[in-house]
Length: 337
Ligand code: GUN
Image (cartoon, rainbow, N blue to C red; front, side):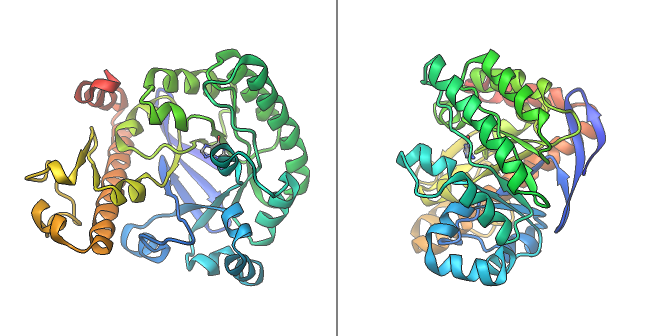
């Protein structure tokens, strides 16, 4: 299902076949919150040519109005989108809120029922601050749930996440265990706290202790990574897919992405980078705009910056210069140095 077209070291350009078309990688799957459509899936498809997006099956399952439509007409009708739809399982909500009221089996059945292209099993989120026995539990329980999820998901592509916190041998163990199952893709999970705390050396080690122990013919996804400054490094380490709500969440706070940093609208007199969305406005004009329109423009800009950086990554792979791009980005940002 996944064909590698070009390589530069561990970086690769590939094509993943899904029931709703081919996904060209490396790719960003924008997170779509079905309750808050900052940029509509239709616009993502038509304006930006986005081939895949990710949404949360647990959020749909929990929201009666959404669940009814999804069960009756399918998730593609619900979101009004014809590309590939991947769903997450509620694991992240469990990490944020402590508990959720769906079982791993219910969530797999539901994803299958609503016709998602790539479903995600309910893994156990291994936090970086967990001790060894807690991380061991997360790795082993995720593996056991994976075996069951594979039986229940027959006919739907399944994502088998890798856990292991910041225990490198347990990352390797998780990759080896999960790699034995017939998963269509693997996502490296449990890394959001590392990115929030800008712990990029540990993020690098997480990828390096997981990726080499996974089957080479499967795409590798990095859960929750959506800042363009991380794309070249992650791609050079073998990541094929990303997902994040950052483009929209940053926009709500007036935070503007560049390929090398984040700046704030309040501190900006002139744009350090021009995108189609920003080009028609000055920073002052945006500050004075009503909040709904401002958030939409900033979210569109953030998405445009992400898409352009991934295009740069693909061009760098074609030219066998991905590490040059990584070096440039590392020189441009002190946290990456
Ligand atoms: N979203 C962000 N991190 C994770 C993770 O570790 N697992 C899942 N399923 N979703 C995530």
